[in-house]
Structure formats: structure tokens, C-alpha cells
Length: 402
Image (tube, rainbow, N blue to C red; front, side, top):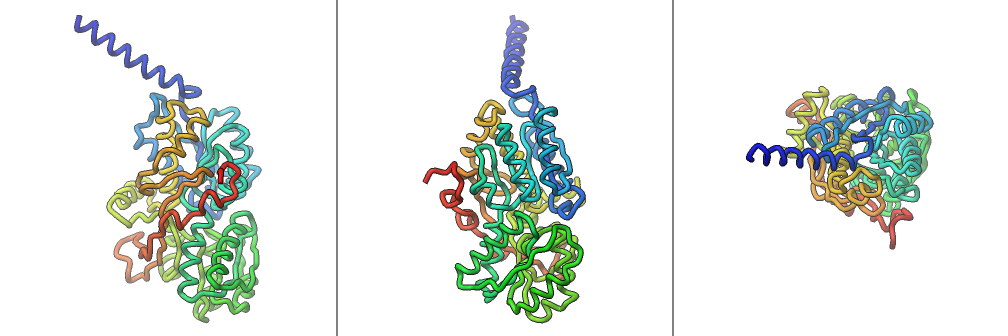
């Protein structure tokens, strides 16, 4: 009789697992990490975000609702058409359920629009434009980690308060750069500062001399670098050659992360003020995560990598809560669940898909102040989420009811 009871229990458990798996399309959950793996943003996200996503799946147990979870990746080469073609193939022939990371705003917007038509979840952790949760928001689009508004509030706000009340922008010539310049310029002017001008440069430019000379001759107290990745690093290096900082002007790296500081080196990066949503050396939990990440990659995580870990974790939690991987049910669950993980505590998702969380104003240490490898930041201030991000009701997203 005991054997019969045990067998019946095992059958019941197996049936329950099968029933759960039946609520998962294709019997598995497949997540695509689509980003730049060979260009100017390769260290900003790249293969490191892929590793972060795999860490999240492993930490979740490798399954959700009894179904296995798989992570795939591809390089979109910072081209919206290439990204859209990969996304379409993933959705139509490879049973990918969700696409994440999506470094480069033009790519993020293109894939989010395609995913709306396909009823698939996207979670942007690498793209920055506020348009993702603004006028171009969708029911299935989410934005994690940071955006151009939070960078403007952090870095732009800090420098204006320190007397940097006149600005000239050196801007990457695509959606991300425009958004970052606009948000920062609005914040500068709202706080009594003025914008003296701007110049736009091609993505992945190698010669910034003419742009920097225009910025230098403007007489602006602050030169805002509305770019990212190697573009920012190269502009900072060439600015040193022109003696811009030595001449009394300040550089504002409006999107600069730990990965770029490491690539540039403390000697060149020291004193820069920047904003990130995560720092591996901030507390015991982040240090533990950073050490695990380092063992896998040989690098410490920035906010894009940790944000991708958080996005994947939240997506799997939402599937578990919804009891299905149906996009409508998962989107609803993502907006209901709090975000509590190594990336942030007490984060929440607004009606426009923006994950609202604290950001951190950082200053890059001098070489002599760094106690250990990758110990690059002094945390100057914590910016509460309600200040760091635009109120969803003011975002322009048509999904938000006033």
C-alpha cells in the first residue's frame, strides 16, 4: 500500500510539472541577448551582458514552471536593420520568447517596435533614450538600468550645482546622443545655466579634433560628452592632448561606466563625475556578485551587466507569477512585482514600462586612492528613484492614464 501511495504521489507530481510546462510555449523559455559585441559598445555590454544573463538563469535554477530556460546571443553591429532581421528570425524560426539588452537606442527602438507587432517582451538595459518609455512605449516594452533623463539629473545636476553653468555639447549623431543632449540641456537651463552650442559627430569616430576645438573656443565651463563607450574614451584622450581640462574647462562624461573607466585608466579618468545605477564595490552583496562575475569574465560588472542580470531575473519571476509565458500575462506581472535583487532594492515598474530605482553619483578616484583592482569610484550621492526618473505620467507614453 505504501508503494502504491508513493507511486501515486510521484505520478501526481509529474503530472503537475507537465501541466506547468504545458503553459510554456514550445515547452521552454528562450531569451535572446542582442547587443554590440564587436564595436564601440562591446565592453559596455557585449559578451559580459550575455554572461550576466546566464548567471541569472543559473541562479533561478535553470527552469521556470518546470520548463528549461535557454539564453542565446547575437551581435547587432549597432545597426537597426541588422538587429531587426535577427529579432525577426529569432521570433519566427527559433522560438525566442524575449529579447533583452539592446545596446544602442536606434536598435532598442526598432526591436521594441517589431516586438510589439509580434507580442513579445523586450527589456532594454543597454539603450538609453527616454523615447522607449515615452511616445514610443509599447505594452510589451520595458526599460531597466538607466536612461538619458537619469544621467542628466545625476551628472548634469551635480556639475551645475558646482558652478558649471555654461555648456557646450559634443554629441553622438543618432537617437541616443540627441536624447542625452536634450535631457541634459533642459536640466541645465532649468537650473539657471545656459547652453552655448553643440556639435554632432558620427558613431565610432576616431578623430575628434575639429569637434573639440569648437567646444574649446566656445568658452563653455563644461563640455558635455553626449556619447558613450569608445567614443567617450577617445574624446577624453584627445581632449587631454588639446589641454582642455588644463585650460580650465571641465569634461562631463554623461554616459560613462566602470568598463570605460577601466579601459581608459585611472590616470586619464581621475576626477570625472558620472552616474551609474550599480557599483560592484558599494556593499557586501554587490561585492559578492562582482567577485562571482569576475571569475567568469575577468571583469567587474557595470550597470548594464548587473541590470541585465536583474532584467532576466525579473522576467523569470514574472513568468512564475503569471503561470505562463504569454506576453500579456507576463507584462502585467512585471508591472506588479517589486524589484529586489543585487541590482536594486525596492525598485518598481511604472505604467510606461520604466523600472524606477535609485541611481548613484560617482567620482572617479585618483590612482593613489584606489585600494584594490577595479576600485574606481567614490559614491558622492544616492539619487532616489522618484528624482532620478521621469514621472510616468509626464513621460508622454500613451499607455499611461493621467
